[in-house]
Image 1: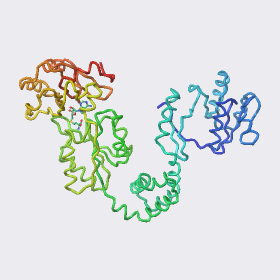
Image 2: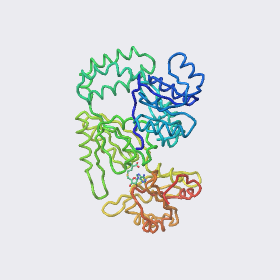
Image 3: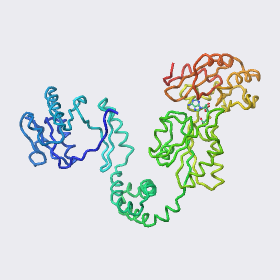
Image 4: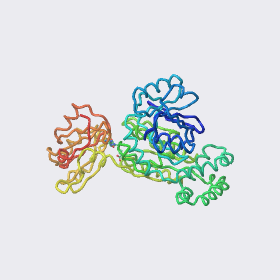
Length: 464
Ligand code: SAH
């Protein structure tokens, strides 16, 4: 972290802007919006600044900068077009431990101004630490579209009831729930639609009824698919639930980048299973989900890929259903889709493959038991999950059951992540290739003529 983001209260504070051009004018406008007392020092100033000066909104010294201008100010913005003067102002300001910003010179600043989305009192600031203001502005533009203008009024509604809610709901967890209920439900919609008074009445009655409504509030489980690894492949729904959960149970397939997006305060419980070594047994996970939900918590069960594809998601919610616990299931992009797309291998293609099957290559008692006859069908793509350990045996069985030994196979390692690597061979050659390459789990096998298309269609930058 090169800069610590803070929000400054500069209301009624003396601030100095050196320079009187367009940029200085913009900075002055911003300082004024934040309620500062602004002094501008510059021999010449823009018309806009002249007007502000004439109407007494700013103080203007028609002069060049002097050290004495710094006396009594808390914050300085240097916006002259003279590098030496800017440097000089920066040196002097730092000596006096003032907040100093030199426009477009991050090295001369002890604070920089982020791009902002202003929904006062809600402020979203985007900074690239001075590395690329254009990128910050583009990001800001995206956020502008995401955050409705009415968010400021929503925050005002919060401010109006904050004291009362704190008094009525001393418990912090209850309080947070109350606010989440207000900010995400129909009451927020009233504000977005401009019915602020109605929203106020609704908050009041929700508060009056809280002991009942919160007593009714019960724990819930969200069984959420986190996709194959790239956080960009999460669904909106997954992200929303990830951000309102009290506790998360996750396993090995969930990448750190995705876990990072879970609500910061949420308790994190690793329940990962390693092959042949079960960190937490499946029935223990099922029971843990039940217990946490019964404590009234919102429990996020975050799983790699799609929870209903080789994810035991079904087993987990079966127990919940039996116990009468509320749950919802959010699909995720399964490894087959993610890996195929990022490896440039279409799973079906009119010329090569009319169907696709997903199977598990997991070994049971040291051998793979699959319905070979249905798997070896021509013009079909076969995707094998958990197929690395039994790779030799799988390839051997497929050939002996009649698949052409020359059929192309791709092994996708850590698909959709920056560590993605794809090894391509045939049913005969792939085991040898894998044996001499350092392969890291998780890996997925894609078998079929569609693999040939990769030469033309690969687009994602991979590990060599
Ligand atoms: N529910 C998951 C699958 C769980 S089984 C899903 O829908 O994707 C675990 C297997 O999934 C791994 O052994 C591997 O074969 C595959 N897998 C999951 N993520 C993967 C990834 N990013 N790259 C390659 N294979 C992956």
